[in-house]
Amino acid sequence: MSDDNPKEYTELYKKFKRVSIAEFFEKNRHLLGFDSLRKALLISVKELVDNSLDACEEARVLPDIYVEIIRMSKDVFKVVVEDNGPGIPYEKVPEIYGSFLFGTKFHRYVCTRGKQGIGASAITLYSQLTTRRPIEVITKTPDSDKAIKHKIKINVKDNTPLVEERKYISWNKKSGTSVTVYIKSQYVKGRQSVDEYIELTALANPHARITYINPDGEMFEYKRISNIVPELKEIRPHPHGIEIGSFERMLKDTKYSNIKRFLMKEFYGIGNKTALEILRKAGLSEDTDPRKLSFDEIEKLYEVLQEAKVKAIPSKYITTMGKDNIIRSLTYLYDPDFVTAYVRRPAVYKGNSFIVEVGVAYGGRIDEFKIIRYANRVPLLYKSGECAITNAIEGINLKNYGLTLEEGKVKDPLIIMVHIASVWIPFTSESKEAIAPYPEIIREIELGVKKVLRELEIFLNKKKSLESIGEKYKTLYGYGMELSKYLGDLLEISESSVREKVIKRIREELTTDIEEIIKGIREVRRLIREGKIDSAKAFIRKLLKDVIETKVMSKEELDALIENVIKKFEEKKLLEIEK
Image (cartoon, rainbow, N blue to C red):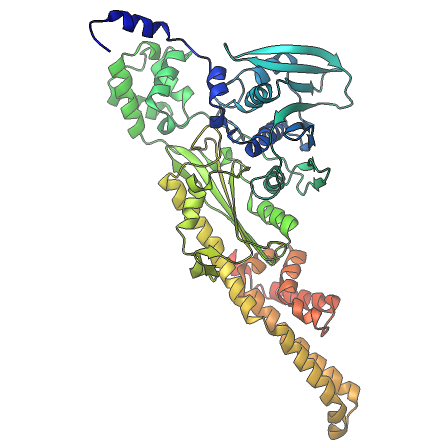
């Protein structure tokens, strides 16, 4: 372009125009996760189920979630997600489903599943793009006699809702929300499918009852195995987790005309003494109006704020699954031979506290090695290679923990489950499919995974030492019964007396083996300490299943023997030292 032709510049600038966020995503829907037909179905179900779970938890309601996918044609599906939550204020429905970045989560620091405020409206946009159908929303609040039904599209030019239908209807529910959407997509089974997402969501949310019907008409019911609703607590942002641009906006938008009050009221962890020290170092009076700071004053204040000693956000604001729930869920879904879990202490990245939880399950209904990733109890099914969880596990030499590897791949039937919980998860993109690999996060994951793998290694070693136990007792029993016929005559005692002595000897041997299992496997000792005797018995019984299979002893007889050994341990208080 020549400097001598200003007309070309003029014509170029005439083409400049502002685009709305909805119009931007209309042409860049891959940024929201809708980059394939297969993934579109998963993302749609995921966003709606996440919203339902969040709504129920914020209202302190045990969730009952119903999901159904109906095949309308070769590549068009009807998706229905219904919950028993508090419903949506009727006047807010069009904005929630008909405009981007409208919601309750983006500006709050709380352990909810979604943050960007783009999930529900993204589905509306995708529906109208691929099938020209509006999203249909029925909702009812507890104080209303009638539900309200909306059919909504998005005006992409200005990111506003287009309401095609709005009417009150009768609905046989106290409260809740039902969303129906028609989308072009593809249904598949297996990994990265809706089926897998629903199963893993049930695992991470044992307080929810989920009913799922797939396009083939198959129904899956995941029972509620906990009656405790996770508590969500809101917190103010930590000053070390704020970028300077966001900090400047907070200064301009604050309702406080006093800079000291601004620091104390807008941020977590800043009290009167800390605020005064920050202002002294920044060269500002405590009565300064934060809305009138100059560019240089903002920059100086921000620098001092980042260097200030401010305590991290406490763990009570972070909603975790909990060790017991992880074990309970893994046991319910996979009936493993071994299961354990570990919850790390809170750690910090950019001032935001986070907690890493790890679970492992081995054997049972598990038939391959699998890493399950979670962020705030939401399963992450895509972009595993970009995720901090995958990076951390790949950095661990799993062979050191007794696992079998071939060409770098684990061949054992093993699940490693990692959950990251925080009021602000650093995702790698708007689609929320991978956690950014901050060094602090990777380190915590590695420490957590190594801890549970050490427990697994002890179990595997004990399992290996017991591989021939069935044959051992079968041989002992067989020889004993055979010899009893002759020993009776030699010793001049009855055959039945010899048999009793053989059986007594077998019980003594088995008692010793059970004692060694309890002494050698920490998870068994934990179950006994916590009074979970049935779980401890089941754990030991699985290791000794060959004894039952060879018919040396019945299940009831083995259970009674295990229980006696456990009682002996409890009476001698041999487990106290680990408390």
